[in-house]
Image (cartoon, rainbow over all chains, first blue to last red; front, side, top):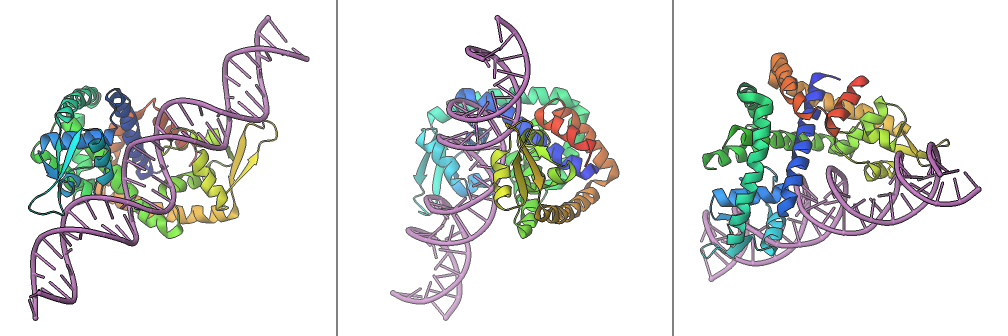
Length: 151
Length: 151
DNA sequence: TTCCATTACATGACGTGTCATATATGATGT
DNA sequence: ACATCATATATGACACGTCATGTAATGGAA
């Protein structure tokens, strides 16, 4: 197996294993990893249009209509029409949503502890430096850059 | 944003971007990345039971019944009952499937060239060394190890 | 032999992801 | 004002992934 192939599958494997682990933790508050990402984005980046939210999400390349739908139905997010531009929609967390955000942060911080210890400070820095160039310029890469601004 | 969080999203982003890029190439031969992984596994690891195939796949943690279904319907894979143990099923590529495998290899090799050049030999080695420990012991990690044996 | 646990596979249910398309609204040029 | 184009969102369609459950076949103990 050539190294590039192993790397490809290692990336797939880490993503899947991480997602399953996070999903198991988030199940305790009845959220999926994608839903949790929406909650975190809305908590950190205030009221957002659907398009603006989409540009912050790594989990979805298009517009997260249906992802948000589920959260609106469960009163975690409110969706209201923008008065100035009626094409747009303004999304914001409810009180319920803000409470959930706290729980999400706690769960994620626990995972980050584990990852940080596994890689160590130097390993973490190397990993970031190696992966960053692979996604710069792409939709997901830009989402990460935007997310770094605040949050 | 703490480094662990950035790493988490970088892994998600590289996986998604890579999958989209590969998917676009594979669409020319009407295969998805997951289907291509099945084809490659069957080509390299001979006739396999569904369970054995599942243990080689990174793309799926359970048993790939439905994934294989689609390939059987399209005459890319043959599925026949095992005579000795009738619970088991034996999967093998058809002639059609072996032809497709060649096309998949060509497409993947092109992607590997690009990745290899982006990271360089040293970068590739570092990346492998950093990611491997994150998945050792997990289902996906074991699948990669098994896959390295042959193929 | 008969019961029972185990194994291999299939399937239902649900939530993504992705692409293509539809619809409504706003912006622009004439 | 009007035709036209662009933008924001919604939705249909399809293939995953994942978990839970169902079913048939096997293996082993009493």
